[in-house]
Length: 282
Ligand code: PAF
Image 1 (cartoon, rainbow, N blue to C red):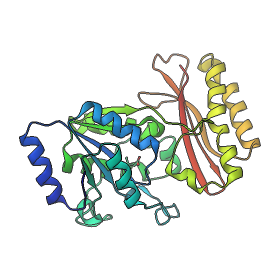
Image 2: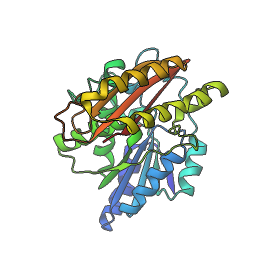
Image 3: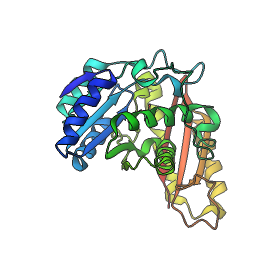
Image 4: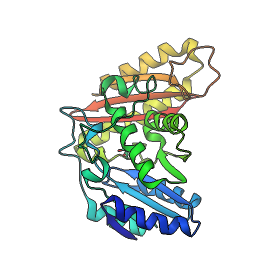
């Protein structure tokens, strides 16, 4: 594996060699502290590309005031070893200047209206502008043929798909299935913030989503099901940001006339840790 490479020109040199050889390039953007969920994305990229670039960058523009930017786990040496073991060809761990040459606050921004204003966007103002901005910059620097994003962050995935289509990057966006622990908890770098008791409770998030999926009979009867699920989670100790059923394509609230697949989305806090998950229910 080449890297960690932290500047634009070293990255460009390797990429242009690969392009000259006619190789197809895949990208897996991450913020590091990698786990089996990330490595599954890498394996998926390997299946569709000749060379895979993974990026590790804790992106300041997607964290709000008071969020965990400072304490977000930074584990580059372990990440590099894991990536090498899972077939990564190049690790791009850019310096802040390689991503934001004019400074994180002074650079151009990408906004994806509508999709970014609901669900997590309503609770984390500016978060998805930061995500869209950094992914657009990574697309511009790497110019990948394909890139993989996990369904665990389904709203993020839809925003990136929309931006890619809208701006015309022409990247094939591949959706990675959520990887879960044996008790159903979706893998996340933030799970490490949970104490033992919280970790046990956290598994209820997926269990409750599965219960909703099991008894969902359509949006016309769905409100009662969603209310019961919210009450259950709150009774079990979660502070709920939202639990909602929305259409996959435009993230609009599920209604009785929808033909689109519907997903249930949840964001909830245990102590200071915010967890998100989602599940297709129809
Ligand atoms: O999902 C993440 O880890 C991040 O939001 C991403 C896509 C790498 C952008 O910083």
